[in-house]
Image (cartoon, rainbow, N blue to C red; front, side, top):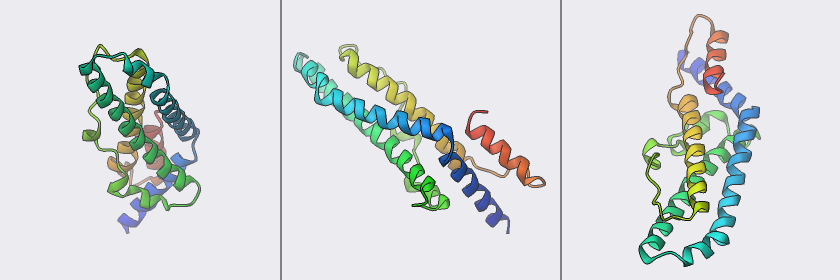
Length: 167
């Protein structure tokens, strides 16, 4: 019975997050950054990369791939949360490991090569910050989720919401 209650509480937290203003803002920011990055890489970034040395051009290609990969992982996670919000996916299904953001996926804090164009550097930094925020939400909601107060499920639920939403 405890697992059923825990799963129900977890599903409530997930569904509450998916309906929250925080999710709405994070979703919009993520999708805007995907669009902005695609525009940059297809436009100004492509032009800027043509003037780079051979080694810098190779670094540019690697960094742009890292940017694209990071943003696709974030977008996938956000789309799962939106599917929960819209009732297309049960909240507990979103708990499956295949939807998690693993820490090893994108090592933060790497030094971006100095010879990268400023536009790419800015997008890399913003995508890294977004990835870390989303990864933190993922851990709080799915990985570290525990019942905090078995004697008072409402208090435990509120504590988890405060933790997940930075309150």
